[in-house]
View (tube, rainbow, N blue to C red):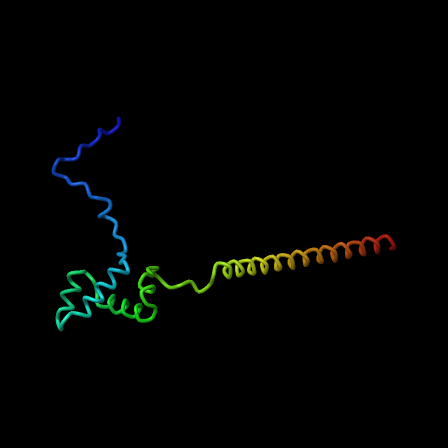
Length: 135
């Protein structure tokens, strides 16, 4: 007998799926420039208040300043997390094909060795058969 559908009590709250999943925060270039300008105008002791108000960390400001110095505003718009790939997709494909080629060469060598063994065995059988006929 199937279970009856359960009714949610009126006082139970259903969680919002959007609030359940946390995502990485993304800051626009304009926002970063505005915060950096505000941080530069802060007097001694006011920077902590700015960081708390904006829910930021001091190392984020440091990174943004380095990016701004090294590459200008264009560098601030980068948001790809993680290290850059050391090899291009073409290089990865070339490596994959080279490994596959090496495996194929090994299989070919084994096959050639097996055929060589079969020829030797057949030759030995022929000799033994011809030797028996002469006796």
